[in-house]
Length: 374
Image (tube, helix red, strand yellow):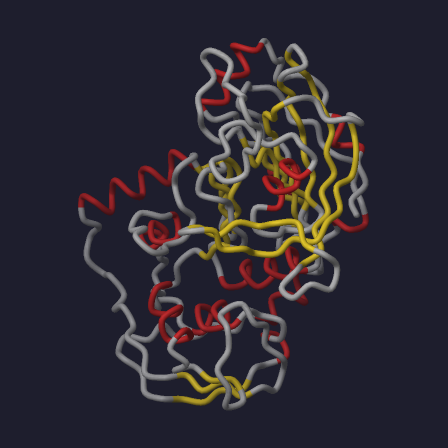
């Protein structure tokens, strides 16, 4: 499988330079992971109140992911609603969707409305959705799907959001009614590699990979100015802050309530007249808006960033679109059944236009490959 996966090429049709193998990228033995996912029958009707115990294999799962794994046909919005309203209880207490479970805990699950498994042919709208997902697909096998998410498409639903990747995945349910699952996120305006698990087995394995920071991700960005030094490490604490009608991440003090440590390595790949720089980024942690907040913090915000661009009296060069210039360029993770998934996404159209206008060479060597992993 590894040789098959490693034949992926980038958007320019050139082979992707493969990193040296590291111990951290060696996947857990598939025989061990298979024990995690004993098949669960796909329910066809509304459930009654039930209390279940968290198994050792489910320890460490987020509450919402636990519920999704137990009930594959349950919609994302329904999961969030029952948790938000306190209808789901862990050891008799209300919990947050992001809280992680421990083995042996008792989970009270309220009555759930489950979507009946669709046996009829796909509707025209569903066929179009499936075709759209196929167009976005960079890599696919029986367990894993890597999508090239376009800029402007949300990964999950939210207030006022009706079109998103998570909802589209409903058209890819298998014969038992299981649907592909997201295992990480991208911001709405960030384009590029989005990893999706097609099976419960893969979802469980890949969730552990991201939690243990074995996943290796590389992002490309176009930023204002040229960072000095040209290669470095950004280490801060980030905390969420509400400003008017939106939430942003701000640099916080160590020990401040709600603050999380965030680490990013960066490297300048190429510059344009000292006004702009093509920067490659390797996040060690995965905080919300981490790269965007970190680059703004060092005085080099990402071009087109509506939340974090903080340069006064700065204007876009002619021809460069005022859109977020941030791409999830590459993802490399252990495959649940052995080998390594290593996929590269092409530049989205607005970044292709900027690269051409500025004379940036997409084939240049990316120095971030030499950055540490931690």
